[in-house]
Image (cartoon, rainbow, N blue to C red; front, side, top):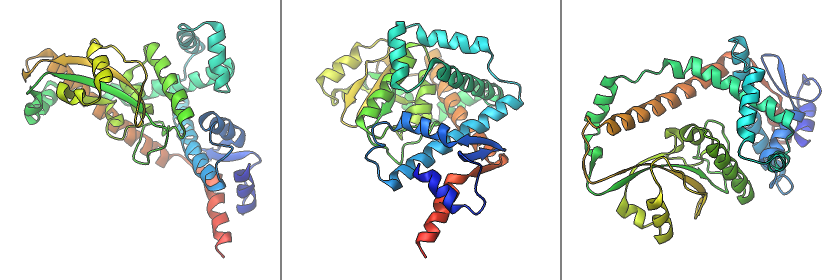
Length: 334
């Protein structure tokens, strides 16, 4: 609770007890922060130095603040998930597992079923908010598709057989260049393994690959585009090594790979399609679908980023941890 002490000692106007931040007057407690922090940094908390712990907690608090802002917007818009919504989602999550295995997974995350239901209600409510405020407003026209094809026609001329892949990447050390919507990054190999396994479980439950990539992938080049690697020449895949090359070629369209251990961490691949050599014309439905999905993902990412910024600007936020850290640094510098 070093940060709590810093806050209480450093602020001229001390916040209410156990309050790390407020969003429009609603408190985010140190209890909430510590619980979320421990679930994300279980392998690093004991050995982390004070500055690293402070950095990590500020990152976690920023995520909690963003979530609270969106939660309040969902409430205001009458978009809160119902008990039926939560129960349906919970049953979906339980379906692939025995009760014992499901309970083990919850325990490993330091959660109870009630904790999970609270989190599901928040996630589903924010999803409803995004569907209304963002997704419903995206319109990719035929003209948009045609213009994109005209500007990128050469990229649809395949000199050799190619494979269209998507990926979700999790690394054992946080890359400052990696950005995803949740601001979620593994810091150790143990965290990376747990994170990629949780993502795999959600994929097996039928959750959208592109959305999970946007939310959680740690690849700075593909996360924003929903993990889309585009068309990869078979000759390039050969360089990945014989076993990986053989595994990728064995995938069928829409099929997922197992969790792959690579030099930079862990990844899951999705085979989108196989394409023989030659020019792909706009009249090909697969080309139109690929372009439409690409444009939709880009627009969705852009609008969500803008929506978050506007929502933060309109919210009244008091981050007592950040304030305490700065005031504490000012005192030590005297």
